[in-house]
Image (cartoon, rainbow, N blue to C red; front, side, top):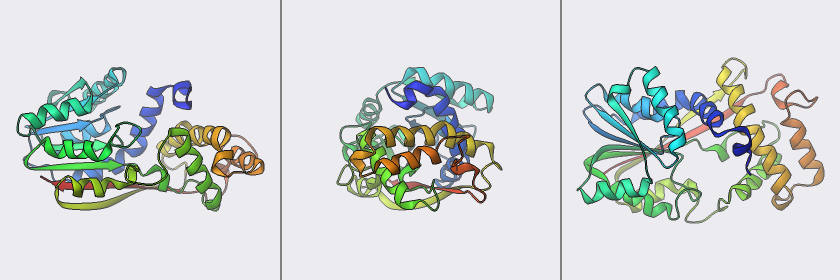
Length: 282
């Protein structure tokens, strides 16, 4: 059982949504969705992208949010209603690859596709093929936006970079993510180029937390999402990642709220989350 399963998927998704919202809004805005009417939010989760897409595309557009987990779609529907865009969105529980195949067989059903933290080896067996299917599901001139929170390149422990590097490896091992190679999640650009998308571009939208308590979403994200995940990785796969017993103990101390070594209580603590957006045109 993973830490997400223990603490609750809904709380995890809501914390993620609130934290990522500013970066998602900027990234969606960079896609220039004006005049695009048929949009897909691939792996909609709690609906952060769904709402941002609906707002950016305007009242005449329709956004379909797809997620393989039907239990989370209620969060997306509730969010769309609360944000006043429920009339221009719908959700569907389905396998993303099936939806893309249907659209591709219909000569491209979508003017824009947004895929946030969904095309990586933990979710699809062949990420490059999934991006190719995404490209094939676009109408001519359609735009794809592949967004990633870039979790493993974030600075969560300033001043402890060597320790964080080992925690990254432990986390990748814990999630079964390949450490390198053609299926690693950082290769979104490579997959977009191989899929034949035109005008492929990479943009960075940093999410900076300083002071940590200035934005409540920062502390909630760190304490609900990041710290539990990294502590679990340290205790279950830390030794496999080259962490000594002392380093595992140090990591747990830094990441435990209320403890004497809690990193978030250090004066001057900050974090940097360099989210990435890869775009391309069919």
